[in-house]
Length: 428
Image (cartoon, rainbow, N blue to C red):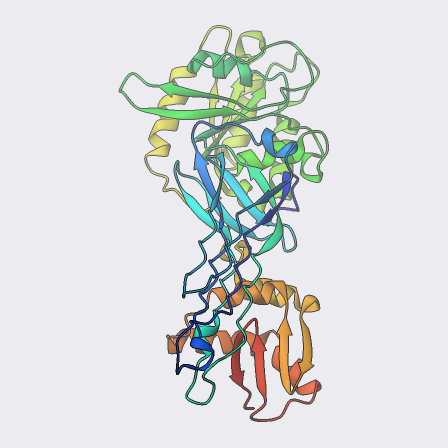
């Protein structure tokens, strides 16, 4: 698993549920006219949506808080309050949304139009008409709406490209990209690198095509965040194949094998899965290499480690077509896979386990009330009409230590436990 990565950190707040209403009809022979208070409306959700028309997360550098609409309060005559409008936040395709507290992945938006509810709006409170019983004919109380979820999320953009170009600055990555695609990256003989990734589509003679990205900013120490290290490495995670371009000429005093090993070390230290990606090694600047035995020795050594090696000159376009054809062949054999392991994904249970410190138990009029933001989120995921869902909910409470906290507070069999309006009797 990669280290914590920087991105755009924002606060999102779903709408609060509206309050239930206390109201009565005016009818003779009916106590207080009979209860007629309507329910409050639900708060709006915060929804993230992937949009092909967006390319960066720049907008989130300036606006840091996003709030959905609250639900309206209930009214008399059993009139329900209006639900709050959902807030849809558009982000570029390839955006990863992480929970800031746990650094776990909430969503990975890889397809145009893909949507996910990240923060759920609060439930509307019940009006007093719900609390009428044979004994209590004129209830003078109603329930308040619950709060909408609020927390911080971190947005990361990982480019969607089939092939990533890696290598030290000034080895010919940008020139290669400009030759094989219609991309027009800035090309210069500088030892620093481009600040943003350049993308292009390579089209082959047989009609196949694939997206190539010249990834920015890899230098020694990148896996520790040196230079643009994190910015570089998080984009590489998306790619299926890496083309590792090496300056075989040594015209700038670099040693090809040493460069190859340094780059791969950075990949492995950042994320061990990157070192397992299919990698093609390209010895560039062959036109400047006067001793061809240097290439042969390099090729023998790299191929003995299990890599395919190509000779190339971006100046003469030697070897470019062979590289593209080989990439196309490999891509047809590689299936799309999730770049995150199961344990890296956010679940309500994991969030509660990692956030038991915010859980509070308050004893009030003989009822044990449990509060905690992450617990409230878990409650939304429970289907109270489904036995298996209820059993899962109970097991989460047990596994997260909440029942132990209740026992420590002196709870006895038959005592009532309340979690955001949901009440049940405790039995050990």
